Image 1 (cartoon, rainbow, N blue to C red):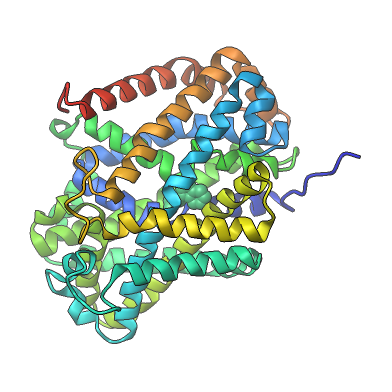
Image 2 (cartoon, rainbow, N blue to C red):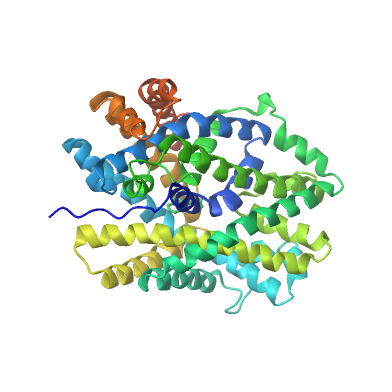
Amino acid sequence: MKQERSSFSSRIGFVLAAAGSAVGLGNIWRFPYLAAKYGGGIFLLVYLILVVTFGFTLMVTEIAIGRKTGLSCIGAYQKMHKRFGFLGWVASLVPIIITPYYCVIGGWVIKYLVEFIRGNAAATVESDFFGNFIGVAEGGLFGNPLLWFVLFVLATAVVVLFGVQKGIEKASRVMMPVLVVLSMIVAVFSLTLPGAMEGLKYYLLPDFTQFSFRTVLGAMGQMFYSMSLAMGIMITYGSYMKKEDNLEKSITQIEIFDTGIAFIAGLMIIPAVFAFTGGADLNAGPGLMFVTLPKVFHAMPGGDVIGVVFFLLVLFAALTSSISLMETVVSIFQDKLHMGRRVATIAVTVLLLVLGVPSCLGYGPWASVTLLGMAFLDFFDFISNSILMPIVALATCVLVGYIVGPKVVSDEVEVSGVFTRKKMFEIMIRWIAPVCLLAILIGEILKVFGVISI
Ligand code: TRP
């Protein structure tokens, strides 16, 4: 007997679930530091263009494949074409690489939350606070990032183990809008800081002299990451979507949500970087949010309390993402290693803990070990976002553009309404996306081996 696959009860339910997976640390932590680093306005412009072209095309493809096959990643690719089963495996590797370091950053969020709750907000403003923390120079258990990382992993694992995602989802439906509103308030405050206008200009006005291969590469990796693309996640979500729900409209809404939150996060952070450091911190990298926001809260009336609320909400956004990331890895273990759910969850927890330790200690005791010149966390981030995801995306374009044909996807979209951006989709999937992805991959590989420097 064929089992009916459970599905989201309404289209809005689907949009919220997919947006809940998309919105996370990628928007609040990763987007602002990349935008700061890669030229501000020019990065924002390239990012927006990518989201509505590339991002749209890939998301339509993944959700349509999921809904059409009714299967999750590995099975879905196999069903599309028997030679493409491997693609599901490569895509599955991505969450296995991302989740451990995602939990490291989640741990940093807990640390800041606890410092703010303890009334220690003033200490977090000190210029070497963050560096000492991730450098494990602070001493003591509470100063050790390993503790916070383990806590974050355990919090995620407990939810997955006891299958109480529903409760978390419900809570996050309330928390998310509050996070958006609070971020807007903080952003408006940031903009009133003396010197912030310089930062606003940097963030909004594209400076074409700053355009480089790096800008495109950074923006593309971020697009994959933020929209949870090229790792099979959206295929799984699509498999739960009802046939009569409008696919294109849902995707537009997810994109607006995801990009909107990233944009606001940039507004909170980048003008403040100019206000406090005159732009010196633009290159701070993964620590940018953690060094900048405490200064904003410190300058803000009631900032100590706002900081507590803010880090709590970010923690929620991070947890919903880490839960769904871990859930993905657990179901891969269940399906492919034939483990029971409990055993799989425990095995994945152990794996996360082991894989996360290098990322956690990579800016401190293990800083002398670098991979391709990068600390562990940056290396894992690079391998997943700049190598594996473009490979998965490229192979997906080849599969849909040339092997099964774009019609398979557009027919699926048209089951539930007109496909207004069909022409663009077809051109993107066959021509523009594969060519750009190939160029990017080749550029990346040449750069890694030192043949070119871009
Ligand atoms: N998009 C999430 C973020 O912006 C991170 C993420 C990537 C994710 N892949 C995922 C979350 C899969 C849940 C499931 O933070």
